[in-house]
Amino acid sequence: MTPAPDILAPDGWWWAALTGPVARGCMAVGVVSLVGIALACVVVWRLGAPGRAATRGRILPALVADARATATIELALVFPLMLFLALTLAQTTYLMGDNLFVHYASFSAARAAIVQIPLDRAFDGEPANAIIDAPSLAKHEAIRAAAVAALVPAAGLLETGTADGDVYAAGLTQHYAAYGMAPPAWIAATAASRYRYANAPFNTAVNVCRYVEPDPAVTGAEGTLVRLPADAAYTFGPRDAVGVIVTHQVSLSVPYVSMIFSSGLHTPATGRGRYATVSASCILTNEGVVDALPPLPTLPRDP
Image (cartoon, rainbow, N blue to C red; front, side, top):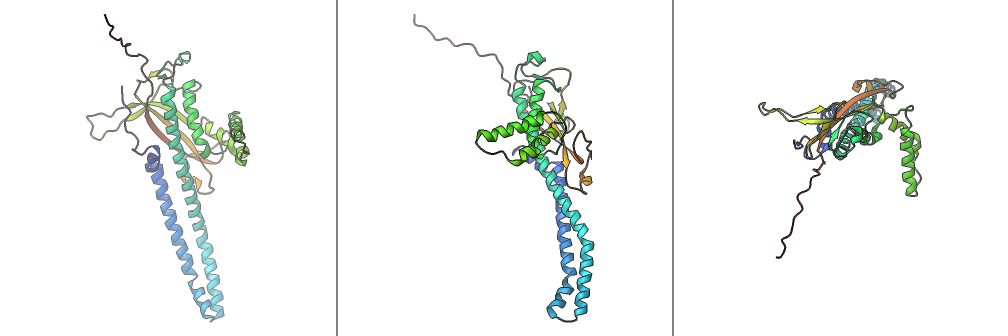
């Protein structure tokens, strides 16, 4: 039996998301973009200084006109750089938010795993505390569904696919109707398409893993997550560490600068435009309990 390690920071999944490599890269690019925009604004302000000074003095009208024309030309030269930096900052912000969603999805999937694995589904070859990490089996699909639901707010758009997206949108509509509220317009506009994108196997992969402790003979060694076999059941102990890895193709929606962050290009069957691959993992403790109960106590009897 392997207790779940403190693999995440004490503050939880969100701290891992904010300190991971994707977050650090986004912060670095964001700082560079902000500094670049600030410097460009200073340059534009300085370029217009002669025109402003001449206008205040009301002298040399020809010089005023010439200074203004020069400033306009120089602004036209600087503006593309400012636009590029602004678009880069926007895409960085979106990617940072999507990174948080992927980490939350890994936490949601791990939380589902620790309550799904203890279930007895012997008809699927998965008795209590055992799981086969393969699609179409009940435990795996329940774990994957938890990750997909967490990813919908950050998902891209996929118009074609299964009817699951329509079922998801209908469920949201019924939820609002149950409270006597009109459903928001975004449900009819994008809810089904976003669910189809998040639920597409190419866009979202979920794998249940076991935790391998680090080699005590190696200084500074870290434990690793090893994926479970897809053709045989793996049994966890009641308090074993259960890990889940979620890999999601984050949709890059900002034009022109998306290629900077791109891992590949979608096909019509998987989405629109470019995407960036983001992975996150989470480890929680299996909630399976031992079925055996202690002996029934007996009370002494009077003679």
